[in-house]
Length: 327
Ligand code: GRE
Ligand code: ZN
Image 1 (tube, protein in one colour):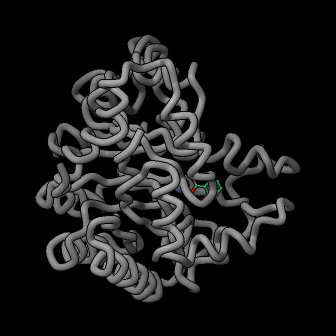
Image 2 (cartoon, rainbow, N blue to C red):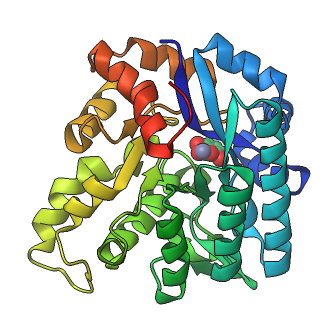
């Protein structure tokens, strides 16, 4: 399919690049990752063209800003990364726009940076890499807590999507992963971490307070669609601490938008589409951690959707979600 739009497509600046090194593992791909992450120019566009992707929303690698302990440094790095994305989007306006990196260490600074990015730089939303550390390494701040309500008020006012992207659990809080590095990272732990954060948002009453919030998650919903029925079924019996006014599944299906990033598999996709419907599903690759070719080859051929839905999920849904100025 030609004309796809993708929006979990990562870049890096020198200050954040090292955070991704771990994920190259022993694959020998670090040099390639480095080159691909730092390039927001023509090489990336060539890869997009080869894969039928004509527009990408760029975002920073992970954990990047969320792993910076010093708030002023986090503010400066987010700003620098966003300026770099803005520069690429200005140079290639028909190819790129941005999702803002945000210094969540300070909710007011995060609001200010998002406002700057959307109003001054034409960004289409935010991408945040899970919980934020702050002050000390053994810290993990989630955004359902009351301190972040003013931040969510800004997201609601700007009316832009917020992409909740994975990061790895911090070692001090992950004793049960000990000795199993693989379990903690992208194969499993990313989805555990991100799904818990997403479910915390659902259970905090956030969507009662801000009914227009739109949260994007990748990797076919970080395992939540498969689990959604059971979540609601069991919560009828033990809703301890749940603060939503409605069943959790209703918030998830209404407020969450799900991409195919890094998850190119027919049965999982079919389940996700059955749970979410076709209006809140989107193509994405997760470049460069996934090869764009793998994402596109699978998506273009998957027999699980009709061609009319392929166009919708591959393109037109994204135009609507982000209000893109594309046909
Ligand atoms: C991602 O961005 O989703 C990602 C990484 C590193 C490894 C795997 C992965 O940042 O999916
Ligand atoms: Zn990603």
